[in-house]
Image 1 (cartoon, rainbow, N blue to C red):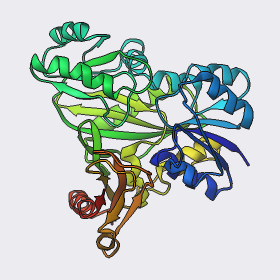
Image 2: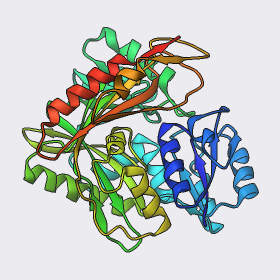
Image 3: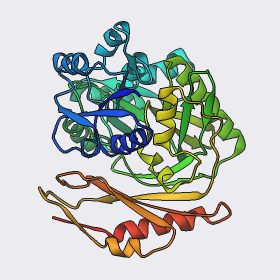
Length: 387
């Protein structure tokens, strides 16, 4: 059986670890702090700063894993090219990890090299250059650090007074040591989706039913599957996802995000791993959830098809403030409700708006997606994180 070095041990890594252990794989979970969610279920763990290339080299040499699986952005990903030359398998590939961990690389690949439709964009490296970029893009516009996740450091500029604040917020929320930001023209979209895309070693690409999602502060709050969308737009999204993932190479699951507007489909972002909005698949909406799909693609196990089994929704449980020992109330309300479930991630500390768990709901395929989504949100609000 394979040894997997998991770089990043959050809630997505935890579910991936559980999926891996169900079929006998060995997981070494790595993060910057002890008792991270995936560490709680892994075979062993390491605590390092993954932006320290020498520390990263040391644990790769120590464990000699069959697969190196990144789960977060803040990693010295340029070392991955060396690991591949040494014979290690980086998931999905060193190229994919490097391009997608930095919004500049993936956006330039999509827009300039592949000719894919995206929002107009600029880059900025200071408050002064951000001012210039905003003047060229126009307002409103969106500012994001080149390296961040879960909406950290992301804000919308609507007035001149927002520019300085947006720059500072981007620097506070940036992950890694890259100060640069991307400035995007605001797309007046009708809805946005995540298209989970599975690339396999045999060259076949599979698509999960599209996932709709709602965001606040740049972070996902709710998701539902399937998202209702026009067949022509779904086909366009699938073609774009296949084109980008082929260019990046490698096997695994990818969370490809799109805006759908009156004038068509816009590529937004891409993650080379399970996606937070894909936690809706924990409601068994598909024959395999996103973590099982990622694992099977990594190991080269055949995936003949992805089928929709139910409709489903997810809603996050957020912490209201800081705590070193958070507890939960209201779980019995969710447990007493039919056609739902919940996951608590086991994060050892809380901070404002930190994602601490998720509620998932489901029903038969012919049921109302909107009602299932409302139910998920209502139940998630019943669970209180006590500080």
